Length: 157
Figure 1 (cartoon, rainbow, N blue to C red):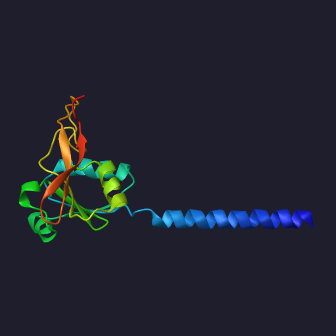
Figure 2 (cartoon, rainbow, N blue to C red):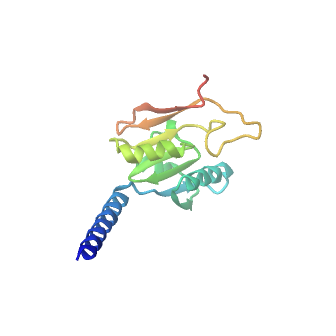
Figure 3 (spheres, rainbow, N blue to C red):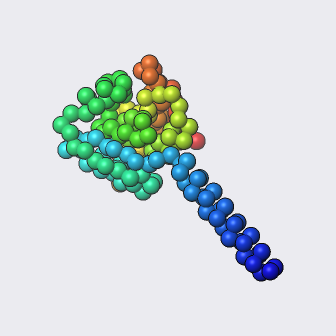
């Protein structure tokens, strides 16, 4: 009788833990990333590889012009870079580090998304053989078109 009770408790605890684990897994933000890029940009492939290494599932669409995608989602032209991503309802413009995107989809701010304007050396996909790293900022793009600093990278100590 006692062994049956212990077995029931053990099975009940296992069921509870498995359901709890499933619930936690379902609340994690999705990491499905759609990337739009032009056919002639090799650094975009480096950024896509960086995102895949960070656990993002990527779909790549090659287009002749990124401007219509950016403008339809509210990204000012001044923040444009060489590729545009969409993840979790947000736009990700340029060489944004994966950890910034992960933070974005976890915090879910009211915003268009993130941007790293231009193509700073040392950002994901823009690594150099010499290891040069320009300081740069990831900007949170608000719906008004205004920005605020979301993260700083490669800052001097």
